[in-house]
Image 1 (cartoon, one colour):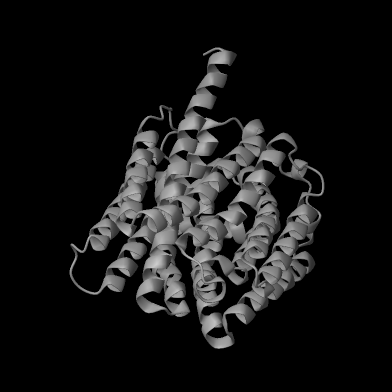
Image 2 (image 1 turned 180 degrees about the vertical axis):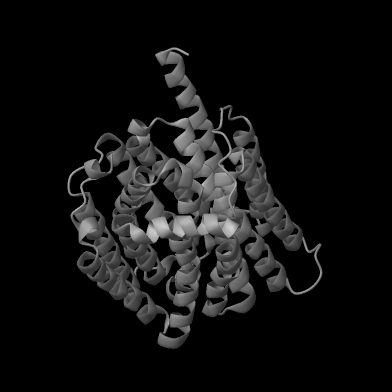
Length: 409
């Protein structure tokens, strides 16, 4: 294969992988917006919003490490990605039937049950994506491709909530759930169209031994562990997004279309960051950039909690996305460069537990804090805790604080 043919191969395969990713993100975000609105309409209780996160994180946490092992040790990574998209489509279709009134019994039970299976599906998505990413692309393209992938991901985070809010506001919950189902099926098609020669299956070892190898690698690497811990606790305490239905309903007294705007605002900021970093990747002072932007994120969350204006809240969430976009791209680049090829599935799964589960645990923490402290104090408290996490990480992880990306090449 000539150099030009190889370049085109990388481009086309990566484009299909990005198509898979954005359709999955769109479907997931539509479901997140609609499910939150659906549950709050039924219960009018902020704690019920936190329980959505708990319903997803428990099965996700239970299956993520096994998913990482499977992706590393079985031949077809595309198969696992396709199965995850298929399972998510089944969950979305179940919620469609619920919205139509075709399922009997307690509506919240069906919602939480569907979200639980969504957690299982999510466990396979990131390990499959990250492993395919490394197979498709040469190593020297990782940093730029990570920016493109993150920008694509953030586009989904912008459009998904906005689409979900509009579909509910101007259509119905049934329509929104149906669109999510169709997007999942589109993701299955995209992943099936990727043509690549996957590496040979890794040597089979006992599953728990395999998982232990991945855990040892992460916990013995100060840079990787510091980056994951920083993001995990920042997301855990800065989970204001989970409380947006309550802010919209109780403070701003607006409808689901406004919920879509606020859900999309952080991702819009992250898209702007991703586009900038695609052309101007950060190489110098990477650790300080990571710590500084997480601190900026925490300050934005404090400002959002104190704001009584809808549009001021939207601006502050937009700024939080600008800061978060830098930290996400830096963390993903660090993970791709620091992880051995044979461990990508397992390390990605551990990364998912640190970061992915913290979203849901953060939602639960926010729900409990809102119940105990009140809605606004709980968000402000979370922002201050995020600032504390930055200070602790800077103190305990000097290798991360002083990191230059060229050290990982």
